[in-house]
Image (cartoon, rainbow, N blue to C red; front, side, top):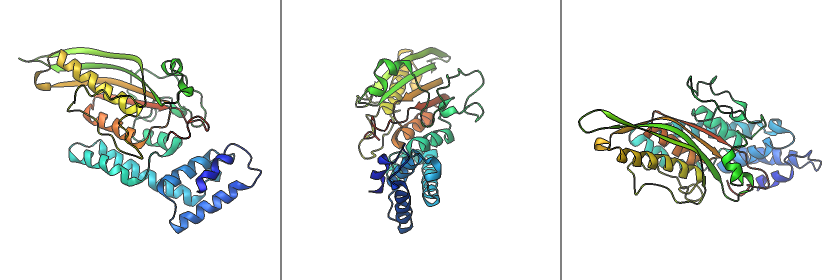
Length: 302
């Protein structure tokens, strides 16, 4: 496949002349309609990483990717809608034929959906209207292409980039308000300074919550992805706290901010889970940052 040639040309001067051949073959396959959706993403990602950078991406490939990204964003926006529209959108995701939009494409997607953390990829989210006045600011990471908010202490302690698993750092500061019998509200603060979840773990669904998130199978089941585990843990923690303070009829709400930092580009199933959580907990701000996969370290994890 054409995409398999990209690692040999990315990041060098391509003295072999292979890059022009890859670009030419990519254009031919696009014209013939024989380039799969996943291949469009992989080829764009590889060409962006080449020495030529964005200039290496042929117009036809750029247009094909932009069309895919637009369809993906439109479908994911429906996940945030109430009622059956959300569930239908979640279950339609596999039909896109995509696992991810790639590193830069995912950052752009999260930004468009209002999920990208302040400072990620050099973006000031307050200027984009993603942060509210008075919200705690993130520290900006190094302004490198494809690396977002580096140096999360909890992940560094867990081995971070050297870990064979995808890691997700979960931080949140939330206020639970639970309706009481006879009127009034009870309040409890839920604070998590930095828990690390690993891909492959068991979801915390608190014995089966009515607020359970729905994963999507993209190449394989995604209910053990680190981001999905982190989001499930937030819901389970809130549900337990509501029970402990005696929420009348299950009536409770949650306010505050949840922050996730992941050591790999989030897949579309995990982005969908983020939007499901936002639909279920509309007063909770969700902020996401992630690391780009290193060429040798995580190429097989997407």
